[in-house]
Each structure stands twice: as structure tokens, then as C-alpha cells.
Length: 576
Image (cartoon, rainbow, N blue to C red; front, side, top):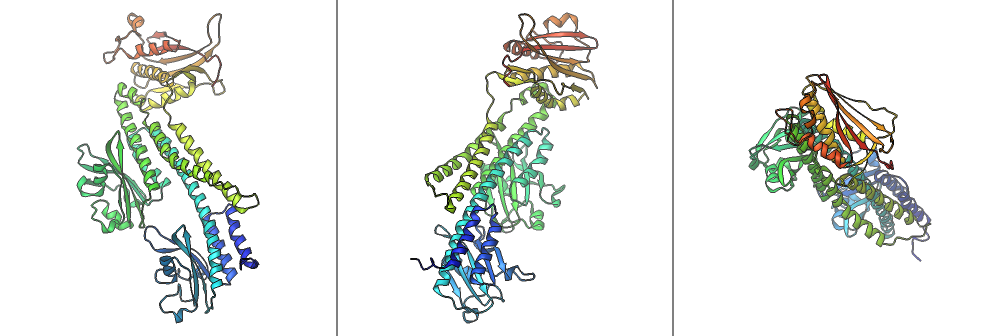
């Protein structure tokens, strides 16, 4: 029989600690409860939990109870005392009287005796739990063994809670990453995109400052475009040569560059900000598009920090989204200057492909974790406390997998086959593309479908239908005068006789109309009524309409305007 079996107080304390794994409690609250339970069991006047900081290698106080939580009491000194020894050797130790053991310093002057046990993860020390008393104590081997027993159980509980917390954080980050991609792709102007990026990065990641530099046209230097995190960066400007900074290395080698201690590194950028804001560590991530570097996304921390692989992957993903958003915005601004560039801009689908790639990279390690977890066959009896632990972990893994699945669904490329489509969102998306173009001539576009009308559903190819709408709106834009008006409408035409039920769309402008002598040729290839026209736009529109078993015609054209009408067969199954 184990000598602890008859210690009901120890069993009660162990149960109180282990039950925390079944509760919806964050690790910090759990640590406070654990320390209070241990202090009560040993009648200690102080207790604290320390964890090893991976960035500094030093033991740092994570949670405390008793003396150190009182007002005015300084935090425990950890680097020259018992905690440092336990962390270094990975063994428990007790000091009955610090006055008689000058080799060690007490955590605080109020402590006379102390007992500490390392907190282990596999074979590594990740922290320690200390108990302290005001008076000298005579410790026995059993005391240390009991504290070790409680600490082991505490480690198991905290490890499970930390795992759940990490999974939840990853889930939130994935959700935020998806939202960021959608937010960035919805913004069209380059200035608007650049202003958005640092704020989005600060929301997702734990950093103090974020800055975005773009490569100069000559490819020899970088210029700060935007930064966020401190008011000092408002109107801050900076230009630097590639060879003068680690940022240049990120550009030249297309790799992330990490600087652990900026004040001790010969860096020539952000010097006033680094000094005034106390920035310590930096990660520079190249922004690349189709293999070409176009800039650098920089993040800075206010404390020494080592960026782990997970953080680096997320920053790389954010840099990828940034690259696509920047290129999308640059292309969109060119759209305002010419119709042909506008037509090419709608083909930019790189964001979906990048999102899919990111999700695949995350799914691989997630799949391994799920397989390993399932292979453990943690089939505990339902009354066993670990049964609930296993259920919680499995639930969180499934939750994370669901977010990855959503990201993959968002990132899939368009299907080339025809499928049921609601005309309303297609028209709204197309109108959003041309809003800046219309603003050049202050043209008002009116599209006001009935709010309670049934969806007008046709079977077609989304991209091709949007190409039709885009061409017709741009033609109406060319025909309309300054401060002109374009009207778009659609309605359902029910079946008549042997004909099919159809969706009817009308695009009307208030221009001067199409001359009668060219109306019958307006849909012919290489024929244009405008000097700057190519004669291809309406010919392509007609071909696409015919491919969709539809009809297109000039419904009317007078000196007061022109109306183009399209008829497309309705979805016979109404399967949307």
C-alpha cells in the first residue's frame, strides 16, 4: 500500500487540483487555485509558480499567493535563490532556515524557510512551485514527496489547460486571418490597403509596432509606407538602402530575418523609434508576389522575444495576403485609367489560391496531431476524470479543423462549369468594381431591385456573366455625359407558349444614342462606334450570351439614351 493512500488531506488536495481540468477556467485562474490549495495543505504563508522564459532562459513569476500578493510587497527574487537552483538542476529542495544556509538567498526578506519542486515537461524543467514560511521549518522527505506529488498533478492540469488555450488561440488566429484576407480584398485603393495592413497585423499578433516598407522602383532601396503601434510613428518618414539594414537581407534572400536585440545591433532604420519606444526584438518578413520581392513587413516587440515557427508561419501568411492585396490595389488603380486594365483586374484570383495554400500548411500538422491523439486510445472509464479531459481536447481539435475547412472552402478556385447563380449579388459585385471609374465623370448608377422579390436565378458561369455586365456598364459609361445616369434593372419573365421562362436584364444610359446606320453592326467583331474602341467588347458579350442560350438586343436608342436588353433562361429547377 502506498504511504499516501491513507492521507485523506493529500487525496482531497489532489482531487481539488485535478478537478480544475474539467472546468471552464483559464490557466491563470487555475494556477491561483492550485497555489492556494497547496498553501492550505502545507499551512504555508506564501506560494508562487515560476515558468522558464524561453527568450531569456530565466525563471519568471507567473502566479503568486500569500505574502507576495500583499500591497507593497515586492515580487520574489528568483535569479539567485532556491528557484534558480531547482530550475537549473531539476531537483526538489527545501531550506529549513535561510539564516543558516547563506549559499541561498530567500525570495523575500519576510521568508525564513522555503520548499521548491520543479515543474517538468518530459525531461525538461519548465518552471517550479515554491512554498514559503515566515518561521524556520523542519522538513521531512515526506513533505517534499507530497509537494512533488501535488506539483506533478498540477503540471498535468496546467499542461491540458495550456493545450486547450493554444488550440483556441490558433482557432482565433485562423478566423482572424480569414477575416483579414476578406477585409483586404474588399479594399481597392492602394493607400487604403496600406493603411489597413499594420492595424490588422496588430490585432492578430502579439507585437508592439508594425511597419510596412515597399521596394523602390529602382530596386535599390526601401521606403516606409505606413506604421502603427505608437503615436510617434504619425507622419514618420524613412528611406534606406538595402545594404544598410537587415531589411535588405530579407529582400535579397527572400527569407525572414530575426533580430533578437535591436539596441545591440548595428541597425540603421527606425533608430529614434527603437530608442524612444524601447523596441527590442524584430522580425522582417519579405512581401513577395510571383517570386518577386516588393517590400518587407516588419514587427517589433517591447521585450526580448524569440519568434517561434508558428509565429513565423503566420507572419509569412500575413505577408502573402499583403502582397496579393497590394498587387490587387495597384491593378485596380490602373483600372481607373483604362477599360482594358479593368477587365484584367477581375481575373486576379491569387488571394483564394494563397488562402488555400495557407490552410493546407496548417492542416498537415493538425492532421498529425489528430492522428496521434486518436492512436493513444484514451478510452478511460466515464467516471475517470481523464475521460472528460480527452473529450475536451478532441472537441477543440475538431473546432480547429472546422476553421481550416472553412478557409479551404474560401480559397477554392472558381468552377468552370455552369451552375445556378442569383443575378443580384453578381450585379452588385460588378457595380463595386466600377465605382471609382464612374466617379471620374460623376456618373450616378441606379440599381434598386425589389427588396422582397424572389431571387432571379439563371444557370451560367459566374466569371463570364460578370464580364457581360462589366462590358455593358463600361459602354454605358462611355456613352453617358458628365454627371450622367446609368440605370440597371432585371425581372423575371414567365413562360409564354413554347418559350422558356427568362431573366430579363436592362442596361440604360442617358447618352446621345447609337446612330441608326451602325445599330445593326454594333455586335459585330472589330466594329466600334467610338474612335478609342476596339470593336471587341460587345462582340464578346454577344458570344457569351449565346453560349448561355440567351439573347441580346438594343431595346431602344434615342437622342436621350440607349437601353441594351439581355434575356437569359431561368434555372428550370430553381436549385439555388
